[in-house]
Image 1: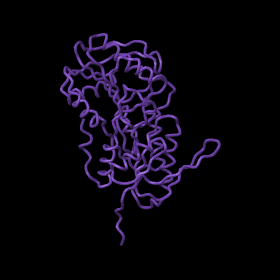
Image 2: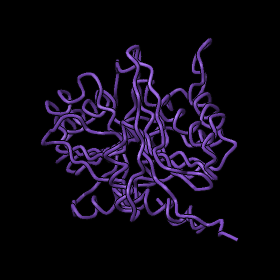
Image 3: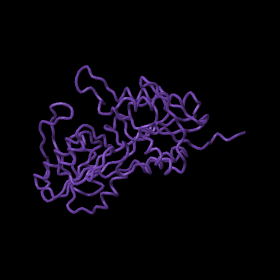
Image 4: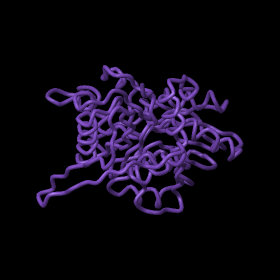
Length: 313
């Protein structure tokens, strides 16, 4: 009787092809063959060009907007289910639409919950993701979720800088838990920025809680979109006497005027992962790969080994 244990296969959606190749190489295999047919009206159809019957497959794809990225992941999962894959793990380095995790005013959707249900309905049997915008999004799934921390990537880099008078900062109240976790690991002080928004991506007021005089500050956040909050916080801290301000942000969305905001700000450095491709080069942006982290966890998932060590902040 043939063994039920087979080698895992790794595939990537279009937007994460480069990261997928890095993860596959770190895993010790090649990226699986997928072709995507496109129609003139914009409709597209992914097709697995090799057998996946009875196998465990990993589908790598961040679901950052536009909506095509999420749609491609859903189609890839559905195709795998209909091709009789045994286990279908959706690997989402960046879980898009996560900022809509609750009703913050009447008559709005909870998009993160909707995306979770769509992934499960399509046929995903497991989710692997990194630095969710809100930890409670894990509860939107009925399937197992492995929520990884990019701190395992950032902390060695920060320790390598060997900064004196290091202070960790959160650019808003919502990120205070993350900032405290980093400060505990680095045995440093913490400061927090309090901000008010006039509307999405527009800050009307910001104040600093804590003293940064003579400190080397590292801002910590899960994502950087237009970089308005980060750059405003960096400028404010330099005005208050900080020696330097850096920022670490897991997911480089970098939309709108983000690159201009970063290049014109007093940020010394922005450190991000490659969960989303960085489309423009900047002397201030340093990209650290998350491929080894995902490859390690995928190995352990396939071998049914413990991955608790990958959850340590």
